[in-house]
Length: 416
Image (cartoon, rainbow, N blue to C red; front, side, top):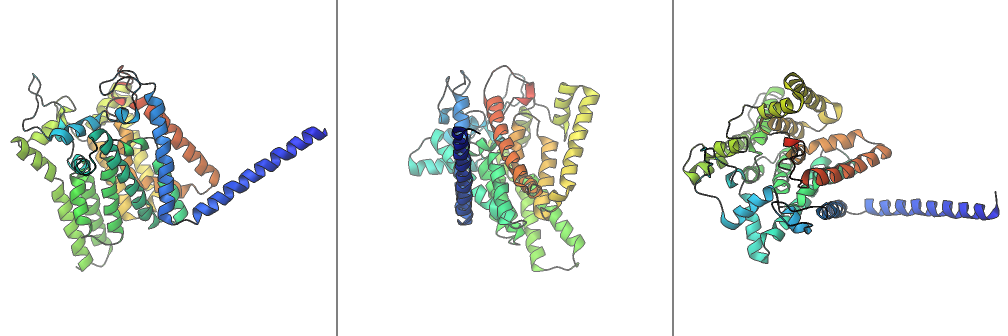
C-alpha cells in the first residue's frame, strides 16, 4: 500500500476510534445523571426534532383554512382541532347547538372538553400570552410531565435503561409532534398515566381527583372506568375473598370513575337545554347518524376494500390487536397497564373512525411502547426502532398534517 494511502487510512481509523470513544464517554456521562435530568434532555432533543420537522413541512404549505402560505411554526400548528379549543378559549361554549338546514347538529365546540382551554386561559391571564403561544406552551409542559410520569410508571415493571428507552420511543413516534400542539392530548395522557401510577402503588384515593379532571380533559373516562372495574373484578376473583381497606378504596375509585363517564354529557345537556346534546354533537361528525360500536371502522373498510374484503380487514385488525395484547412482552406490563391498554384499544375500535386521527389516538396506548422496548434488548434493534419512529414522524407531518385540499385517501386524511 502506498505510504500516503496508508497514512490516510490510519488517520480515518484513528478519527473513527476517537469518535466512538467520545460517544461512549457521552453515554456514560448521560447514564450517570439523575433520572429526571435524563428524561428532560431526552424530551428536549425529541421536541427540537419535532419542531424542525413541522417547520420544514410548513414551508411547503399553501393557503389553507387556518393559515396563509408558508406559515410560521405557531400559526401552522393552530389548525384542525386546535381551532375549536381556540374558540372555547375566546368565548366558551354555545348555548344553542348549531344545526344545518336539515336540522342535523353540525360539528361544534361541545365535542371538546374544557380543562385544556381553561388551563390555557389561566396561564394567559398570568403571562399575557395569547392563545397561539400559550396553548403550545401548556401542551409542551404537559408533555414533559407525561414523559417524567411515564418513566416512573414504566420503572415499576422494568429496569431504568429500558424504561428510559421506552419513553424515548414514545417521544419519537409518528404523532409525537401533536404533544406540543394546541391539543389536549398531552394533558389528558399525563392525567391517565398519573392515575395508573397511583394504582400501581395502591394509592387509589389519590387517583380520585386525577380521574375527575381527566374526564373533563379528553374522552378517556369510559376506557379508564372499564380498566379499573376489570382490575377490581380480577382482584376479587384471584385473591382471598375478604374485604380490606385497599379493596374498599379501589371500589370507591371504580364507582367514581364510572360516574365520571357521565359528567361531560350532563354538563352539555345542562348548558344547551337538550338532554341528547352530547350524543347529537358526536353524531354530527358522522353525518348526523348514531353509529353502533365498530360501525365506523366497518364503513371505512367497506369504502376502501369492498364489503366482504372490508369486513375481513376489520376482523384481521381486531385479531392482530388481540395477538399483541396476548404476547409475552404485553403480558409483562402488569395488570393495570395491560387492562388500560386493552380497554383503550377496545374503546377506539368501538367509537373512533380510522383516519388521520388514528395516529394521534394511538398515543393513548402508551404501555405498548414499554412492551416493544422490553422485547428489543439488542442495541441494533433499538437503533432501528428509533430511526423508524423518526421517519414515520416525518411521514405523519408531511402527509397527514399538511393540508392539500384534495381529500387524499378520503377518510384517512381527515382530522389529523
